Length: 450
Image (cartoon, rainbow, N blue to C red; front, side, top):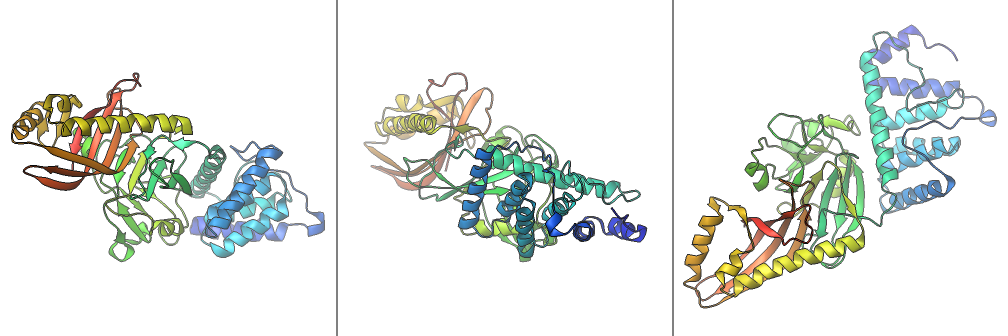
């Protein structure tokens, strides 16, 4: 292979990644033997053990993604990588070239193109590991290439892990059609899943599966400036368009309500946690590259603009997503609906003590604890001759981690209340808890708020 002139190496170093990747592709295109002589060694790409059966299944899934969303550039990238791994080099190169025509700023795609071309003259051991740009003092370039390898591995690992679509996220135990869509983020796989409500008694349907970047440091956010992405059940609060933001936020941002009620109770600090886009000169960011926000490629964030509704759309962020079977989903949903109905029924009955039995000992609501809440409810009940309470638009969102050894589920619903001296119609949130090691224990109310 011809040596790259030192002047070209210096240019690649000072321009860093974008120029380096373009040089890479150009050099490899000029090194490629005639098409009739093309042979290639399948690369040892990490996280991609394939047999013919699941390879065909994986490619078919990607074809369906592209058919449903022609702008799903990740699906084209993954398709190119799978074809490359299977030794179908010309098909892989055609796929990546087609992608780069649509997304020329997709740096990882440029890197993969260089690998595909290099495979026709030498072995490719890992993404970008071909020794073609041996620049002096190239630590910064090496770091950029390492980040792109992390991104490639994150995208591949997540896709191969999710080929079984029969499982459901344990965090979405009931998604009412009035909510329409819910966002689930898996930090361990750098994925954002968008689910669509069907019926209250049916599991939600997965409609989008997107790559995201999260906080620079692992773990659950605890305090301001710790560079971690929080974990919990949140709700989108607003939309901020790009004209009101610096360029690094891309096409705009959806803030979420971190810290929520439970975060504040646990003493967590900080704010400004958003779902936002990427600086226009980059297609995407490395897997762990934010100060705590969830960052999407602009083209992917754009596909969510009509689906996310401030004040309504939940965003459940977890260190990892727990997946359950449809049978487990139905059982959990049924137990929560029974608990909520028992609370409603006992409240409507005017039996205040039976109603109060549904609350946890460490319950709170605003400035109330259980004792002051009970005192207030007993006083109010003395003036009631009847109460009618109905609930609608009920959704259940399981917390992605246990707190003090207890599972937590956030219930969101519309409450219609009528009595002899008051009428009200509000949206309400309850935090329901039960011991993690006692799945048969009754759910108790930890928090109540409108």
